[in-house]
Structures are given as C-alpha cells and as structure tokens.
Amino acid sequence: MNTEYLKGFLLTALGVIILSFDALMIRLIEVDSFSLLFWRGLLLSLMVTLWCRFRMPGEALFSRDPAFLRSAFLFFSSSTCFVCAINLTSVANVLVIISATPLFSALLARLLLKEKTPPVTIAAIVISILGIAWVLKDSWQSPDLKGDLLALLCGLSLAAKFVNDRAVSHRNMSPALISAGLLTAIVSYAIGQPMTLSGNDWGWMLLLCLIILPVSFVLITTGPMRIPAAEVGMLMLLETAMGPLWIWIWLAEIPNRSALEGGVVVVGTLLIHGLIQWRRNHNKRVRKTPVTGY
Image (cartoon, rainbow, N blue to C red; front, side, top):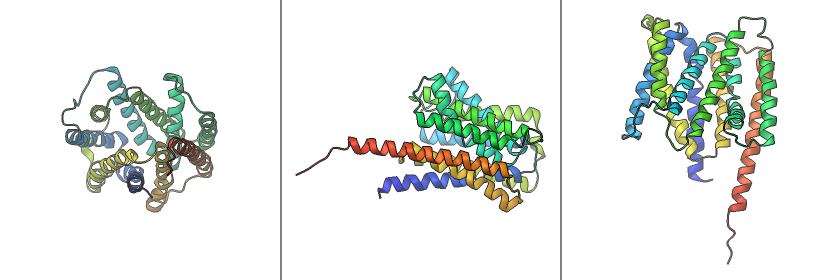
C-alpha cells in the first residue's frame, strides 16, 4: 500500500475520532450554550491566528470582501446552532442530521454554482432527506424539535460555507475562522455569562478548545491532502457513529429508535455514495494511467 495514502488515511481517521469527543465535551461543560460559545469562539480565534501566522506568515488575517464575510458569518451560524442543538436534543439526532452536510453542499452547488450533480448524488440527497425526516418524526410533539431544527440549520450553514469557499477556491479561507470566532465571542458575551465557569468546567473547556478542536482541525486539514475526497467523506462518518457512543458510555444517553433507524439510512446512503464515487474516480485514474511495455 502507498505510504502517503496510508499516512493520509490514518491522519484523517485520527482527526475525526478526536473530533467525535466534541459533543461529549459540550455536555460535560455545565454552563448555558452562549457562555460556552464565548470561550469556544475566543479560543478558536486565538488558535487559528497562531496556525495562520505559522503556516501563512504573509497572509492577511482580516478582509472585508463579500466572500470572506459570508464564510465567517456562515461558520458563526453553524457553530452557534451546533452547540445550542447539542444542549436541546439528543447527540445522535444532531450528528445524523449534520452528517448529510456533503449532500446539502452538492445541492447548493447545483443551485448556486450551476455545478453538474451526478444522478447517484441526486438519489443520495433524496434518500438522506427521507432519513432525516424519519429522525425528526418523533420530535414534532416534543421539546426536542427546536434542537433538531437547529441541527438542520447547522448542516445547511456549513454546506453554504463550503459552497461559498469553493466559489473562491483560489484563496485560503482559513483566516475567516478568526473573524467567525470573534463574532461568536462578541454575540455570546452579550447574551451569556461566560465568567460563571468554575471548577471542572474550566478543565473541560480548555481540553476542548485548546486540544480537541485545534488538533482535530489540523489533522483533518492535513490528511485529505493525501487521500481522495470521497474517502474523506466516508471517514467523517466516524463522528456520526462514535459521538453518540461516547455520550452513551459517559452519560448513559441512549439514542431513540427513530434516530437509530434514520441514522442507518443516512449513514448507509452516504457510505454507498462515497464508495460509488471512489470507484468511479479510481476507474478514471486507471484508464488515464499509461500502459508501458518492453
């Protein structure tokens, strides 16, 4: 097996596994959502600033052009919706709904960028929407509905950010995360009470914002440089599978039946779609490889 491929696969998988602890950390930090978001946004800005200064020393950290501002706002929206959703509904529901983000991205890219969408992707989008509807079916008459809808908005915001960034693919949009983090901190400071953290909450917060999020971000950014995008998408499904597992082990929160059934539909669809796309790309590379002889 190619050494670079194996390295990319392992780096990406490790990054996703580390990221899968995100939801658990949010649940363990016993403060309101906006108090948590303040520190999450502020520390994210700090870590991304250090990363950008190390990797892109001459790059401007702030910009006022529309694409940059949209990227920052959409990430702010997705982060806010994610943290609030985790505290309002089950982790399984949130991660299953958000796992469909790549397909939301394909749909938005077709609508906004006029990118061609293969029939297999259109079929996957339809099936995944049905799976998400199944996850939501028990929420219409329960307090979980708000959290599930926020998870859906998180996935749509994240998909819109990916499409926005793809439209300006000649630029590195990492600095937009700094603005997004600062916006999150400013808004959250006005709404929450970030100085009320105490005891173990500080430990969990520092672990999440200074280790889990930055390390997973670096690994997930580095790994895909060595493996195909379709395989990255499949590896990202590890978060959907493992996030609820950590919650079940630590907090004894068992996913409801509709979340499990809908999750099987969505994750299974994404996995099959990823395999089909990987197979197509692999066959194209094989056909393009010149045949040498003696």
